[in-house]
Length: 210
Image (tube, rainbow, N blue to C red; front, top):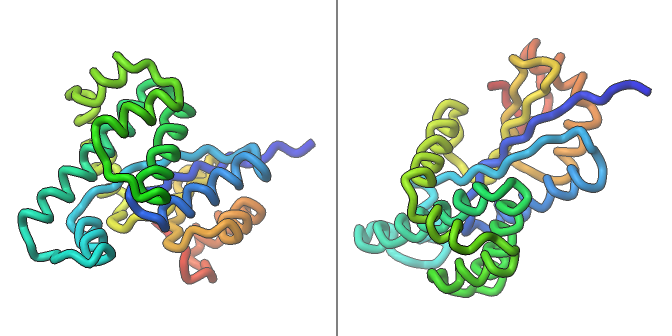
């Protein structure tokens, strides 16, 4: 049996973005149901463009400095909670993120400390550890590391995926429109895509060579 090539997928997300939720679910479906050779991470992204998008989508004044600061702090708090959950394992972290997003985005429940604790209980996190970690310098450093990674990969837009072929370490692809079909095709034809990327001959307009 031929050994499959491992693909590494880094999805940069806005935890409050409905489009990011759809992208996350596409990757989960791909990894869980189709290909067992896909490694993936959901990496939170926070920058001025994300705040702009959120304020515009909620019909608020994106030029109001107080609103911008409030929204930045809200996004930052949610990301630190997610990073704290990840300290208890990738699976627990993903469960926390997806459950929190269901409450915040789908059910439109306002974020609060009580909500974060309720979600932590629902996914069976160690609560004392979670409450300590979400306030810790370690969580803040993890957030900063994610932003550096995004900068190094030249990603500033949420729902952007960076895909690496582990057999071709120099081959990185940026996917700007994450759909199940696009991910499936990349996994199915990753050898061909690697060759195209290295030769600069990609035909998919949503794929770019890093």
